[in-house]
Structures are given as C-alpha cells and as structure tokens.
Image 1 (cartoon, rainbow over the protein chains, first blue to last red):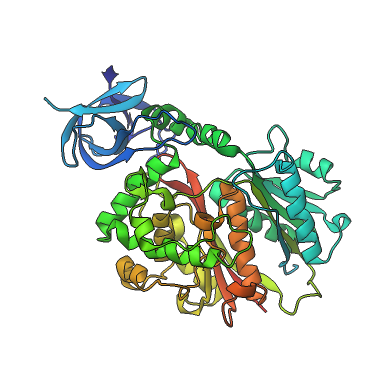
Image 2 (image 1 turned 90 degrees about the horizontal axis):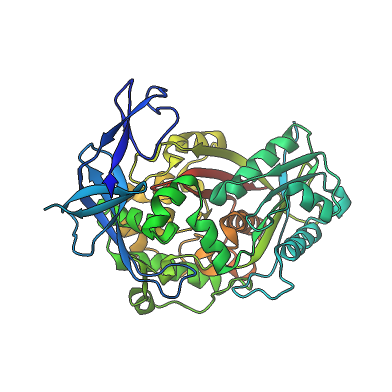
Length: 101
Length: 380
C-alpha cells in the first residue's frame, strides 16, 4: 500500500482528485502531490450486487471527507461506520480506508 | 430561420432478452421505419442523421448512414450518455433552423446485454476505470447509492418515501404496450426488494434492455397531425460544479431561469414532465432544480404522488419501461411528451397538455453526472 496522494495546485493551492490538467480555479497546470492521511466517513454503501457477476462478495464503499477537505470515494473495511475517522492509503491509485489505530 | 418541429416518433420492441435477430442494427431499423411512417415521409427525404449508441461499435454514424441507404448533408454522433438524446435534439434543432438540413433522423438504442453493459459501466471513463471500478463500486449503482444517501440526509427522506415515485411510474408503464415491466408494484414489494447497493433496491435501478427509439425533426409540418410540436426553450449545462458538489443538485440550477424566460412560461404552466430517470434521487433533484417541487419539500411531493395524479414519466420511465441505453431512454422521454402534446398517448393521455418539460442527465464522471439538459416543448 502506498500513501494516498491528492493533487494541490502550485498556483492557488486548491486540492483536487483525480488529477486535472488545468486547475478549475486558476487555470494553473502544475501540481504538488500532498498526502491525505485520514478522512471522516460521510456515507457508506454496501455493494450487494455486481452486474454480470454471480459469485460476488458484498463489499463497502464510502464517501470520505479527507483531512485536506476534499471528498473522495474509497473502499472500506466492514467494521467501519459513518462518522469514523479512517486512515487513508492507496492501492495503485485506488483509495482505501482502514480504521485509524 | 426555419422553425423545427418534431414530426414523427417511433420505437422498436423493447426486450430484456433479445433474440438473435434483435441486433442493434435491426432494432434501429425498426425504430427508424416506425418514425418515418409516423412522420409520413420517405427514407429519401431524410438529409440529416444524429445517432447515439454504445452498441454500434465498431461502426460509426457514417456506417449507419451507409447501411440505412441515407445520403446526407448533416451528420452527428453523440457520446453524452443520458444527455445524448437532448444534445442531439439541440444540435438538430439548430441545423434545421439554419437550413443545414430539412429532415433529421435522431436515432438511439443499445443492445449491449448485461455483460456488455457491465463492461461499459466499469470503464465508463478513466476516473471510473482507475479509481472506482477496482473498489467494486458496482458501476453507477454505487455512485448513486451515495448520492441517494446524501439526498435522504439533506431532505429528511426515508427509503420508503421513494416508493410512490416507483409505484406511480409502474402504473403509467402498465398502459405502455412497449414497457418491459407492466405489473403493478406494491409498496410492500418496493420496501422488501433486494438491496443492490444500499440504499438502492432492485426497483431503484433501471432494467437494462435492448431497444431503439427514433425522432424526426423537420422544417415542415406533419399534415397528418392535428397538432404540431416545437421546442420552445432549450438549455444545457456541462460540468457545472467540477464534481465538487454533493450531487443533490444538478446543472439545471445554472439555467433554470433562462429556460422559463426563453419560453415565457413559469413552472406552473407545465402540464407534463419527462424527467430523465436513471435513479429516483436524480428525478427528484432535477424536479427540484426546475422549481417543480414546492418549497423543495421532497417528502410532501412524494407523499402526494399517488396513482396517476402526477403526469411524470407517463411512459413508465426507464425504471419501468426499461433502459435501452441511456441515450434511447432519453429519446423515449422526448417522444412521450410529443405524443402527449398531440393527444396521441392513448390510455396514458393527460388532459389538455400544452407544454411539457423534458430533461436528460448523465455521464457519471466521479461523484455524479456531469451533463444535464432541459427543454420545454409546446403543442400548437
């Protein structure tokens, strides 16, 4: 697992994810990568069914408000509830949330 | 400037389980044939084609023109998902107005099958492919399950509050011979339905079907019809919030006032609504943004929506009639309002309908849809 990185406009400091090619705020094209270490769970959905798959194992996704203020969609462990603080990481660019220890 | 009119509508059979002969090309041929007959014109009269479909690949619009024997002056292929139908209508309207074409066939449809649809949904765009699909987000169901939860929190709704919308649309679908689901839906069935992506249940998710729908837009009138239909106002919004909002509003909020101002009408003047219904929450969001839900009280709106009192998605919508790709589903919504304004909706006919609103919504970018369109149609 790698650190969960968010893009920060070098000109106006606005955060964004996924990557943009122009900043929607100032039109800047250069970004720094900033680590989003944690986030708060805002909503959770249990995905019970996956179109076209018969042996699907239900799993949770969530909308997380990161400590940097922007919201991202992450995969979470089963024991996480709305309002929990989660530690964020990235699995090849895919955001993952695990219970903060 | 010419005054474009929608002079014909037509559709193919809609089916959950297409036969071998129900390929996308055959379904589109059937829809085209029916629209030509309805418009009372010949294939050779068509000089413009707009088309949207995931399923025609590797063909393009020009291949369809060739295979359909169409020699054209104007051609468009649209890729804007749930907004494709409206996008095509807007471009075609301007083409007629400026004389670029006289009679435009607007055609959409899909026959992806479930596996094909799943493949499309999992790689809908690079953001979905790279950041959502690997989570097992379930395609758009996962995205709109989170939007629905946000709407429920923001507007104090419970899951069961949505039932009336589904029940009402199913009642309308029972009078649409083309709908794939016509049996009445009970409140209990809705509440106890299997959850697909919490809180969305089976009935909150559109049934994927094979089918095609066609409209014909013309500079001329259809002399066979007692009433003509024109587009009185047309507005669109693309990527209005850079996916930074919560999805409980749509880009309609950027153009609502313009829409009514151009039409010289107010929300109270609208008699019938075809609101793009990929998910119930998105229907409510659009209705609210259009100023059609009093005081934004969605709970009251839903509670008052019983039986056939609300002329919303009177063809049953995609949620009951089926989604032949979002593109054709959008066209079906436009065609239904045309039929209603011309008093041709048979058992579904709404009394004295003069003005109708149609919308398109789609292209789920990351957190919600990025495109939305609305038009006010007038029967005269």
